[in-house]
Image (tube, rainbow, N blue to C red; front, top):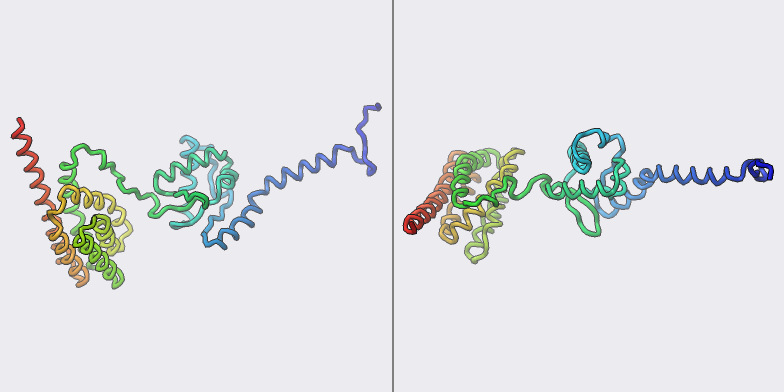
Length: 297
């Protein structure tokens, strides 16, 4: 033994080719996301998905903020959705790709995705991947009304809000509705009527009716108020039972006719009248409960 490293026939130390091979592997791994984008994106587009093509500089360093790591990762993914104007149904890269771009582990990506799913920003389709949700960020009960103990009192309070908002929404709808908008609210109005006449649950289509009126305003903020309105519709329906079904049919028809005629004043008036019927019914329920409480004392 001379103490000198063995050499290959080319005169290089024998460990050098192995070291070079190791470096090549590291280089290939570091470049994984580049060939991943080249392979993954065309494949998913071929399958009909819109895929996010992300570069590393689209994210701030997630270790620089004070929030918990999963919250920081969720914030970065949310910001990407906004800045890239991504739509419902667009597909995100998988956990490995997101982790490599954000320099965080797959566990943090998984927790961030759970946060965004809970906020109705993302939706997971088993076996397919993670996609942008319908109506990202909009949830059915954003103010937690389901946890109010006194639902009858809540119905009164919601009705006060509805009587201020919805007549104005109907007025704006009459001013701005297109022919397509009018055809849509007429169709949904007919579906509500069919549900009532055939003794089916009409509340899902009733909600759609109010959403369609909000869409007629072509105001981006108004549809965001709809979760409050639609919760109220469901609550009033559960409290009123079958008492207002005929009034619902006639009230909806009057509202549609006013919007279709592009008569803002009449649209406001007919919506207010529709809500006044609800108010009277709710007050009857309140008075009945008050009389019952008095008799039990």
